[in-house]
Amino acid sequence: MSMSTTQWDHLIASRSAYVKSVMVDEYNKRKQMFPMLFNMENSDRYSEVLHEEASLGMASAIDGELPEAWPTDDFKHRYTKAFIHAWYGLQIQFTKPFLMNDVDRLGPRRSRALMTAGLNTQEYWASRIFVNMTATGDYALPDTKALAATDHPLPLNVLGTATTASNYINATLDHDSLQDMLTNMDTMVNERGFPIASPMTRLVVAPANAPLASEIRNSTQRHDTTENAVNVIGRDYNFEIVPWHFIQSATFWAGQAADHQLYWFTRQGIQERTNEDFDNYGITAKIDFFFSSGAFGWRGFVGGTT
Image (cartoon, rainbow, N blue to C red; front, side, top):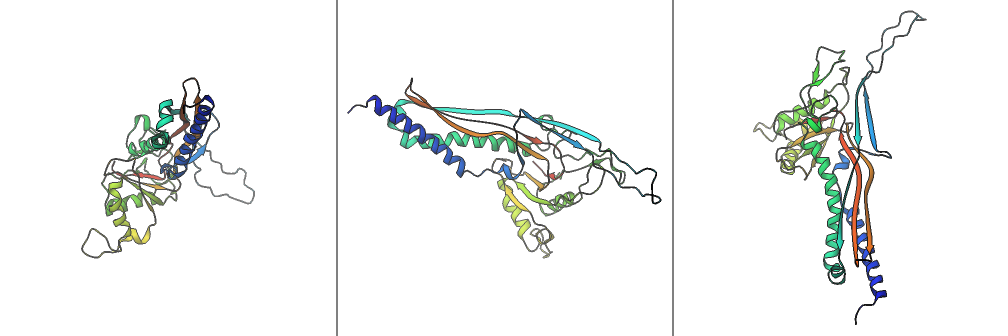
């Protein structure tokens, strides 16, 4: 029996709802990695602007019971960075022959592929900040340095004579270099040179580096000696190992504290939509989203080799 107009209207409406439900299901079941590595914030405007001020120095001694003037200090403005949201989108079409014949077999696969493309886009751009942590240009911080660099300026240092600070370990991952990273985290300073509490909570690695990272952290004795030396990393430190499949370099590794300055601003999350194209007897499925991301500062982050 041939299909009537009424039957086609019902079919295209049901297929449209089915395609959308599959996209929603794919979104709900997919676990993305980057939200645990960024400060996730919502935005209700075209862009977000962050400002950094230098912290205060030290309090001064007060003479007498009624001082003539209280000691003062200023919050000195350092940097400003604008995060301008970009608009991303993608669409696919389901034609009438496809809807009539193949939607049950290939329709779910194509619907999931569309949502996966949006999720992969977010994951890719988030991972670029890590992959390019030693690059400047588009990835430079407001201090003009790379996210991981050896010469971040300390122009307001009131403790000692250091004028720069490093958050880069120029070595491949092993026990000693990881210990250097942990020490770097524990000895980070603010703009005035005062220590800040920033113990490492995550070790982000390429999947190829994950077994070595686990061995270093979990061994009772040092894994790289024959002298049964105590593994102080496994004994004294507590951090999560995060293998990230969007990092292709086999040697990549980086450390992150809970308090860091990587930001992801969501203007609009991934929104799925299906349109019933009655003129062409088909369905258009699309996704779109707005976001911006980047690093505003280096504290709370230490890079290793890329």
